[in-house]
Length: 142
Image (cartoon, rainbow, N blue to C red):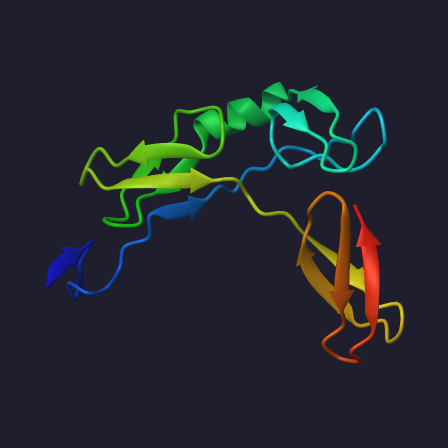
């Protein structure tokens, strides 16, 4: 058994190696085709038209650098100190290594047939969906 901040954990309890960031950049759109770009900063490629687009947002970079993260192993709070995502981090207290992954943005859409609300991860391009309530198939573009 190992001690995890006052809690005993068995040796077979896995410790997460990924923690999701709480900060995401604002949505950015391709200047060529006006489609949603991948949610990140830097040199991005449009998934619809393959245009190369440089996206920067200094407030997001500052928030990423100052973001407080809880170590998944010992629950110690540390400051990321890195202005990009994903970011590989090591806890100063227990030396556990983990990755701070980009925040997954979810959007709420309504089924065109039954109007049930669905929450899905927002990704660039066309998505083919099937409503779990009425089984209606439909497409969504971001």
